[in-house]
Image 1 (cartoon, helix red, strand yellow):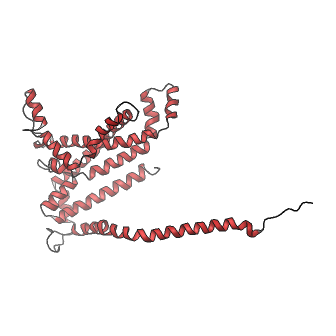
Image 2: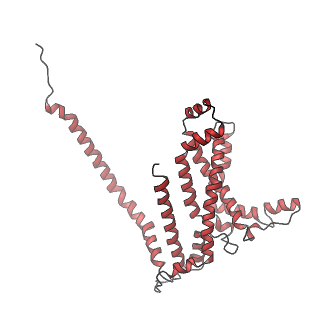
Image 3: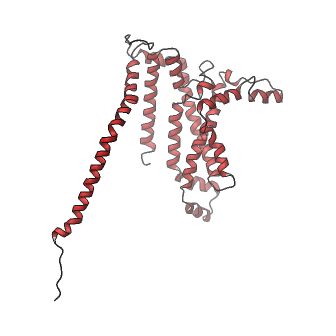
Length: 312
């Protein structure tokens, strides 16, 4: 009868022991990396984020011009003054309008162009570059360029008006029209970024799904509505998130373009903070604006991510 060798318990336990040692080594390496890199990151985050936020909240409780140490404690009076200020109310309205325009015009325009430029057609790289180039341009430079374009004496609008025999338009000097001129620049400046997001999303769509829809007789609109758009859901939610947060923080382009004028008609919350908190040295009031802006941004960001992006 042949001898049958039975593996001993010690031999069988060796692979399990090696796996346990491997896991222990990985955990030890991760802990070492954590101890090396986490303290400097936490230190920088505390110095440049947590402490300035705490100081802004503290200064918002004082009437202070930025010199010396704040001593005139006024509790929440800065916030009362803030919400009774017509310019700040206009800034809130403008930020809301920018969000609406970004979602309703900028994002759909980006989707439309992305669907056309996601395919391999002649010159597609050049077209993508043309539409993406405004986003690469610095916000301050874009503001200065469009300020010249809108100039009623020497700008492009003035040249076109003179050519057709119309009166020179002073778009940025009209408080009823200036905000719409700013909105046009915002759409021009940022839709290219969202377009590239959607192009990246479209390139990840399985082509066999679209081919199956074509075989079933779906039209171009039906393919987009029932196949492409649902598959772009995560990209669309991310794009809207960027549009909302970016709209709340808009500053760099407004200042060289209009400076918040005329008559505070193009103020945003950040330009209002700069105008009153820095330029007019009402640091307590400016800090109150920063607190309000922080609360709005955090509430919208976490609320949006929890409601709309919880599965992404």
